[in-house]
Each structure stands twice: as C-alpha cells, then as structure tokens.
Amino acid sequence: MNRRFERRVLRGGGAARPPAAPVLASMNYTVIDTAGGGQRLVFAVDSSAGCVSAEIAGGSALTSFAIDDATHVSGIAPAHAAGAVSFTVTNGAGASNALAGSKYWNPSLITSVAGWLDANRGTTDAGAGALSAWLDGTSNAYNFVQGTGANRPTITASQFGTLPGIVFVKEQNVRLASAVILAGMSVFAVAKWTSSDGTASRADTIPLTIFGDMTNASMAFGASAGKIASLKLNSGASPVTSLSTTTTFNDGSPQHIGAVTESATTKLYATGSLVDTDSTGGGIYASTTFDAVGNTYTASDGFSGTVGELVWVTGTISAGDLSDLYQHARQRWGVT
Image 1: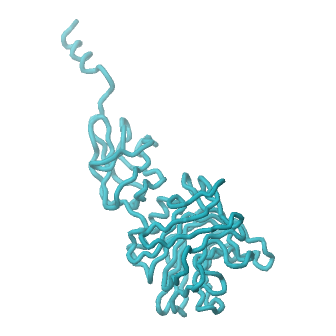
Image 2 (image 1 turned 180 degrees about the vertical axis):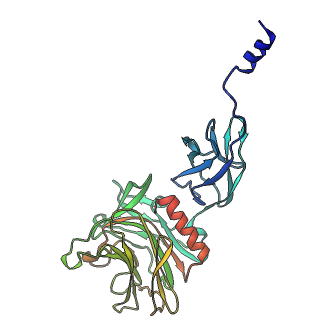
C-alpha cells in the first residue's frame, strides 16, 4: 500500500472529531429551582453538531440531553444547592466556555418571606389525590390542612407541564393549622383560572382566597370578566379597593399575580410587572380565625381552578426578589 494513502486511511478511521469545542452564547432561564426545576433548559451554541452533554460547570450533567436544532441543545436541570452556577456544553473536542449569570433559587430565600406553598412539595395525599395537608416550605411552619374529606382539593398530575397542581372546586379549601394573625403581607400566586363558580350573582367572578374569608379577611385574588383582580379588605369591613389588570387572564393558562401593600398604596402585579395601584393603602388585615386557601366560608365564594404556588411576604418585596420570583414562575410553572 502506498504510504501516503495508508496514512490517510489511518487518520480517517472512526467518527469525525469536531474541529473545536462549542461556543455557548446564552440560555433561556436565569433562575432555576433548587429541586431541579421541571422545565427544560435550552442553550444557544455556535454549532450543536457532535454535542453530547450539557452540565453545571464542575458539577452534574443535565438529564434528557437533546440536540434541538443546528444551534440549540437542551436538558433538564438536576437538583442543586442554592447559589450562582455556570453551565457548559460538551462535544467530542471538549467543553465550551462556562456561561455565568444563572442561579439556583427558591422562594424560601426571599427577604422576610413568611410562607411558601408549592404543589410539588410538602403535600399529603389522603388517598385518590385528596389533599389533607399542605406544608409550608419555609421554617415558619404555616401549614394548611383539611380534615373533612368532601372539602379536600385534589393533587392532580401534569397541571403545569410535568408538575402537579392543587385543583379546587366550590367548597374545597385548606385552612391554616393554627389560629394566628398573618398581617402586613404581600401575596403572590401561580394559578389557573378556568371557570366561574356557577353562582348566578357571581357569574363573572372567580375568587381565590389567599388568607381569610371575603368578610373578615385580608387578601383575595379573583377574575372579573376574565381579568385578574386583587381585593384588599380592612378589619371586617367591605372591600375598600379593587385593582384589575387590563388583559383577560381567564383562559386556563398559568398566571403569576401578586399584591403588595404599603402604608399608602396597594399594588397589583401580573407577570412580574406593576399593572394597577390604589392610593388608599393601609396594609393587609388578617382575621383571627383560621386563614384559608381555596374558598371562603360560603360555597358561593369558592375558587374553581388550579394552584401551583403561593408565596407571602411580611411587608413589601424588593425589586430583586420580585424579579427572581417571576423568573422562578416562568422556569418552574410555565408562566409566560
């Protein structure tokens, strides 16, 4: 055999090796849940040809790795401790540059967080998906329970992508396990509003009570004519304000909404942005009776829909925490 031809044959044996490691330019999420997220991380690279993995720099590889197209690869983030991380993508020539700017996070890290309920954490199934207890994800242990079988909402799989949700109808609710006053808070929810409560007088209203009842309580979210609204109530009086978005949200898709009370204002947020402000302020009042999630003390005020997450904060929430909370809602719950 000609030696020059022989050398060419030897060099050409086996799979072609990429000429260089990939160059990683960006990714779709900057805040990743410490439990692993549940959503797929997508990375933009100069070329996906030959890519075999994506990984936390110096740590675990993402699962279910896939080449999505010529310039994108993806994978499911593993669980990881809270804190800043970098990612790399690897092909046969080696690992890419380390892309910084992301962090592992969850709502328990919010400054002055009072409580956190997550449909994929701390739920107790009493049988056939019936929710008998929903445990606070913070150290404050504001746990919610329901001892009556007929009043238990349902833990239902795949309501927010791969994640479950807590489905409520009419009389179903969970109540705070101990009678305490949860006052002076800001409240945020990931939920899906799907239908009215069926009561003729409330045909355009879908209340989601976060704390307390509609008579003696602090905060409720609902939808009037399909538009998410926040009601602020003071010490047993009628609602003093109703704030509303301008966009119809009653379409069954995941929504992230919140209300912040300050000394002189109440602010309504949707998808991470301020959408309405009321100037009466005065702070959120909470009754001394057991606070509830899902409905009030009357069936006509029942919420029909699905809850993924509730977060409440003592006082206001910082701009940084609010941004992280919304990015978390996008990454974990599929909010757009």
